[in-house]
Image (tube, rainbow, N blue to C red; front, side, top):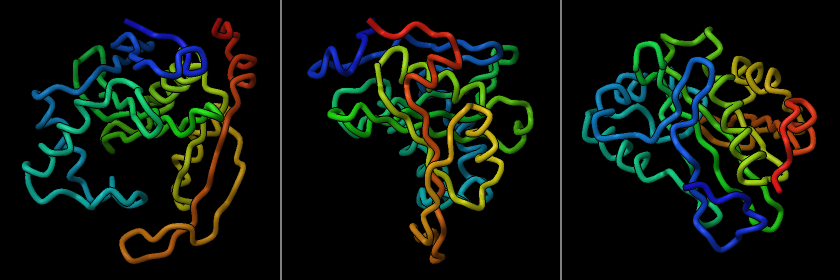
Length: 206
């Protein structure tokens, strides 16, 4: 079941029709059988270089707890909720990463997009393809007004992804976060609903 529009239905749980299908990917809820595939990338030190998510897990028990949180993230009921989906290569069925859409504000219809990809599968455009599907979910289905992407200023590869999506660099925050004992800069990218609809030719929600 899909309920359309945070503005039109502010008190309802908004559940997208899943999986979301792109040209090469299926974006689906996480399942218990994803433990090994999730651990394969979540445990990599390089994956945690630019984000403060607790550091690489020491064992499968930590990843198992992470997986259980991801399995519950399939709908938006209140501000702060997350839709977090496994990124699966349709041709092989392999789980290679995940994407998120976070509900940041009800009053101002704000959201945030994020993504993680196994380093072995970078360079093929999968992140941009998956993130575009989450922008479509936020703008076309949930009727968000503005979606941001927040990244470490050193993460130039992620910046290129957001720029290719048509998101605009709006802010550079100096030493805004401390990640593993180091002050780091944060860069904020954003896109408005009307910019998304103009770029994609998508129909605005009723």
